[in-house]
Length: 137
Ligand code: IDP
Ligand code: MG
Image (cartoon, helix red, strand yellow):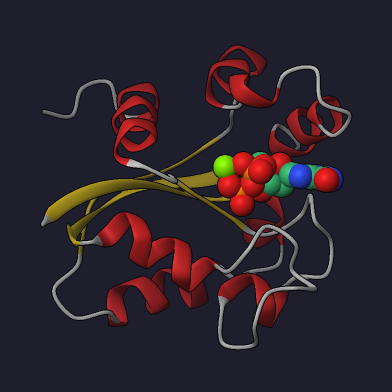
């Protein structure tokens, strides 16, 4: 089941010099490939669309502030069961609850600054890829 997913390396990951480490973990997985990649800043308009499902929650405003606090890396990863697979590599939202060996488990302590975003379903992946890579066919 070939899929595509959107992965973001959040500003904390970029500031801490973990781009190579995190991309390496994705590249190490057999059969998956990175088919689009960009380093950029995010404006509030894009973040409102990306995180629209969380609008109004207590963590929403600080999340958007954090996500616009520095450059991020956005990428599309393609492969068999990649949506579930990248979420497994990433670990759960709270890095303290994330298992060692996962990206959040190995590098994070703060729920907001949890290093990576990864699409959570086929629908989210399609919507998010269109948002971040509108020119991609
Ligand atoms: P996910 O990134 O694991 O899918 P979501 O529930 O979709 O988690 O939340 C989006 C992002 O919002 C999280 O990755 C994290 O950065 C932030 N976040 C979620 N819940 C909290 C919270 O309770 N406190 C602070 N930040 C949160
Ligand atoms: Mg989510």
